[in-house]
Image 1 (cartoon, rainbow, N blue to C red):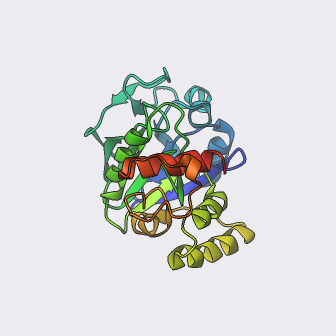
Image 2: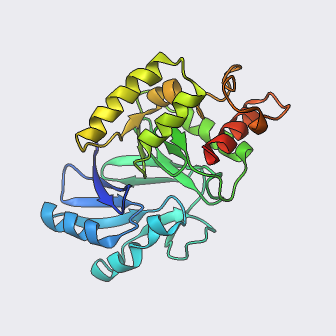
Image 3: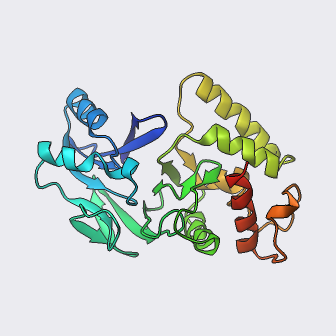
Length: 255
């Protein structure tokens, strides 16, 4: 099993390190800041072999150019035809990359941005700003329909798959989830666990696909009664899961 470490950046970002257990090589996912990456590499005596990008936002990409000054010729994997111009290994859905002894499949996950991709296999999923622990990314460019379709691609992964998203938004997401789904016992129990983790200065990530199916209101948008407690002004006459997802996202944007 590949080892994944977290590098904290900014206020709530995680830069994920994929480590090869058989060597001193590693890869980083969404390095928005180069300094903590360089500090980590020096402390761990590791060599950076490549960079994976999920989408173009600055807090996922601003550290790339400075890292390339220290590690020239690094491959930079990322979405083809995306807005970030520093990609040297453009990827589209169904492409695969092999690193650290594992193979990751690329899935297109438009919604948060139109160029968003995720890197997944049956054991790990690097979900960027698409699927958060108990939440999802804002729809800056895509539609609720696109995001719901993207969510379903991720939810089709095994329940045991470890989810590595880029932000520690979990407690705020859980507060919203409770408003949506106040009678969800699994959610209440997990909220208590997450609070203890954060009070102890520990991360709530990774989560799992199975856990998200149980507690994440956006993952549960197909439930007929998911909008029971949603303010009426956010609800349309449409009863499809996509419409439920849209209503929840509108509410969360105003929560």
